[in-house]
Image 1: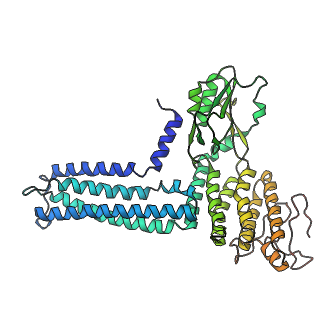
Image 2: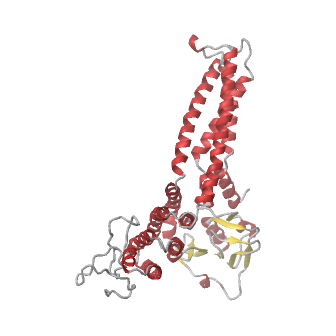
Image 3: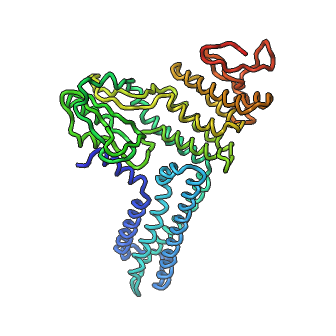
Amino acid sequence: MISWATAFQLRQRLKNSLWVLPLLGGVVGVAGAQVDLALEDRVHLPVSWQYSAGTVSSVLAAIIGAMISLLGLVVTVSVLVVQQATGTLSPRYMRLWYRDRLQKVVIATFVGTFAFAYSLLRRVEEGTVPVLGVTLAGFAAGASLVLLLFYVNRFTHNLRPVAVAAAVAAAGQKVLFEQAGEWRARRPALVGDVRRPGGPLLTVRAPRYGTIQALAGKRLVHAARRHDCVLVLMHGVGDFLPEGTALIEVYGSSAPDRRLLEGLVATGIERTIEQDPAFALRILVDIAIRALSPAVNDATTAVQVLDYIEQLLQSLAPLPLSSSYALCDDEGHLRAVVPGRSWDNFLFLAVTEIRLHGATAPQVDRRLRAVLEGLLTAPAGHRAAVWAELVRLDASIDETFSDADMHAFVRSSDRQGIGGRAVEAARDGSPPSGDAGCPASPDSPGRPWAVTGPADGRRT
């Protein structure tokens, strides 16, 4: 019986594979040809649909050549996608691109049509003409051309940076929706509350190097409950582990089998988004800072990516995020402690590098301020981190822009970067933030509010 981690890896390989569905298409094509040959004598088409052996051979040969040419075109497009993604977007995006179902269906249709036509061509003889088969092959070739048009149209539009950002954000949103209920059921935990002076009963070490891609949380709880112990995971999803690194510590009177615990933690050569929404943020930030590099200098792309970063942050804000979580069984007994990510970690990941790389781009500073001000509606425990980022943004602007007019302009909030409508920050009792599109001080018209920190609500 294969372990949970092995099954997870197999699912990942099937999702990432570009050959499994096309291979299945080829098998279906060959099988379809055999079925067609069995039906040729039973299905009679009108006289106008009858063909000679020479015509059938020519048509099937043309279809076979067309399918090979179309496969070559798809391979060429795939190479161009790889070049563009690795050069101007983020190599991490390729993992999502490999999973596109339309691409796999297109290739499978080409291969299936090729296999069907080739299998029929072998059986064309004088007096034995697969009339039904050549008709079906013609329809399959037409469907292949239609799918090719959809394929070219889709990837022509979907390879734009903003479309890639939307796809990555959608993948991150999907993970958040799937795990939102599980996160709300967890409670923060401290590893120190579980560890005992005598040390762990068992320490499970990483059997091989790799990145933790997923954890089987419910199975870990079930294993700990059966042995009446507590499992402490030393590393969380997204961490890279050298071989032999301590992975799980077991505290209690008895411990589950080492191999069983190893099989509940899936590792691979790179991170995945399945249980790691921070990886979606990582990809978005990569795209933004590449756009802000001196070689590209495309601040507008960075602003568009910030739109989707904001969406992910808004989805994360209401969740009870913590640096570690307690997993309990049905009776409420602590069974496992799993590393997590706090709100501060997510926020720092999302905005720090963009703030540093876009310090000299006014529209990036203005859009970043709008993102942070929008997060001031987050739960009270999360606002301190938002205020800290606003203060860092103001310090960066103060250091970069010495001209008074430009300084005041850059410290304004704008959801379009430059040219949008001024947005008033939602304060909820907190001090007003920056120029941030807030109304002018009533006792000093035209003079904006300034960030003074969460403990000081005075105007300057």
